[in-house]
Image (cartoon, rainbow over all chains, first blue to last red; front, side, top):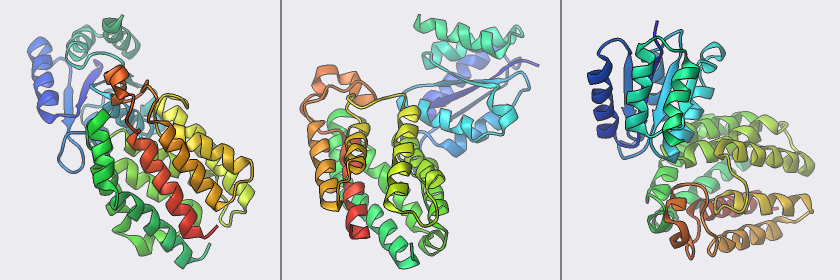
Length: 127
Length: 198
């Protein structure tokens, strides 16, 4: 089973559009979920929705999470800590640009790479 | 701590942010993404939604629940940061803390916020209020002195260059504005001092 991808943007439109680009690259080989928007419906991120997105595409191989700006990263890390212990260690919040990172992470994942490799390849984008 | 005091404390913390939501948002519009006041207001409104249930809890659980509510409802980076402070404060506090217990617990909460934000004092964040206030507490400051330390520390963020958070994108243009997180932290600290009458 391949690593899955979760996309977390302040903007639901960016998150959804990024997920579309991922699917165009890898089809159904890599499960992808997206979430965006704060609990009040504005721009921002929502810890509960991030947890739900991770659960919705859960893979025993792991989940790579791609985020945009600071709050998305902080909220994603918070969400990961709130997962069950056995899941927590298999989720990687990647320090990578959201669109390029998601596409390259998914491409790497579609070849069956481990979560550590998927993360490394995505993070190499930031050099 | 008795229930009326807990209620007074939670209401004061919430009011300090809700009544200054516009000011906090304006500070955040200058150097951030302009949602700080609104986000914290939403979080504290959720906290107030079950005030009787919340204040019926022992003090450690009260703070853990308050912190978790902020984490889940705020939506910006301030949710996990402020939420982590209260959650770790709750974890470290005994049910009926003496002053020394409180100072030890706020110290642990400060460390947790630094880890959560991967930051340290001097980067124009809420830590630039929390850390000096912690130092004042450890030096034995009384309530008025703690408040004064909080407000003075928030003022000192004005000339700072932002190194963490959205304001860091602005580089030198972040200089000359008070950090919104430092301001909201100072307001909450002052509200807590007033509510506890220390």
